[in-house]
Image (cartoon, rainbow, N blue to C red; front, side):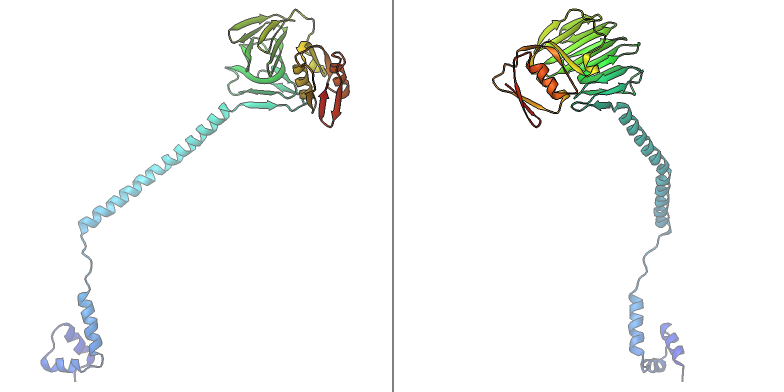
Length: 295
């Protein structure tokens, strides 16, 4: 009798005789072999084209090469972008200095010019551009000692002060603008007004009115030695300066704040400062914590 393996082999080769076919059909796993053969006949391998597959593979290879070629450039571009951003940020970033109430500070500018910044004031400048543009922005009061060189500008909301090398004081508060020259020559531009100040002279714009004072012999502003001085200033501006030098809030009761005041007050003694202002004006005051009432 033919062995099972031989029958299966001849069956797969379609080479069985009639008698061998009958013997094959009697095998225990005949039905399983038929199902397996049917599945194999229904299975179809995917069509394969050497030319098409080569083209597809080449495209992927070229694409990967292109990406690999661009990767270093992308990294360089990213680094350059970061460097440019850092450079732009650092070169356009201003140095800013603020003082609080009752605080003063000294600032040395890139050319060794110095600034004394009074209480409750703000100053900014760009160190990176300083060699080409000596310019500061001021809100408050400051005393400048400017090293000789190209034009030096102090920009405020009420006007621009321009010098080459000198000592001067700029005060810009609400409705109050004052420039005093102590050395050299100072040019002040306010809207359409242009005034040059020699040592000892000052310009004041108070509530929109332009005033030029006569020559004085002072060599520096009194606030540098801890004292605020006024000449024909309104009480309102004096009160404002009291609030800048002391942590207080001043209100008035039936007091004309447009009254003129000439005098000074110290920065280290509140009661003495209040008396220095109220007594010459025949006023009184009361205190409750940080609140002061003039009456």
